[in-house]
Figure (tube, rainbow, N blue to C red):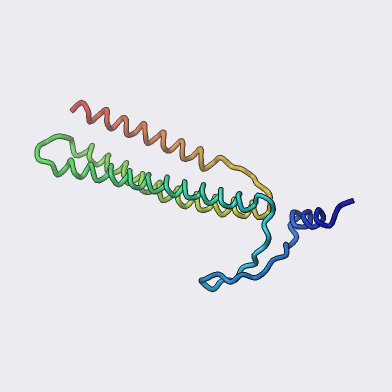
Length: 156
């Protein structure tokens, strides 16, 4: 036989509405605040930390892409004939791709953050490693492209 506390917890877990109080946010939106389940607050905070790590990764990718693209433009402006113009365009292309990929990963990480947030509230977690595998694959491909670029330009 279930105790009243256990029955109330089961009721909340089964998707029924949890009791809560209306809370007005500073920008005018009203939400229903509820008492968190055990560890729910810690899970939400971990989700936010993970999201912020993805944001830092996206910013780093965009910044690195910007540096690569601008470095190619800098080499083009230096006096002399150091590097073929076709190779400079490769730096601009790789840099631009990195900037765009940083933005794409920012969008994916935001969607992942919102998905995990909903899952935490429902107390059902379905982990997916897709975004992590995509990032790893893209970064390996970029590393190979940059290594090739450095190899080609290093012998001229």
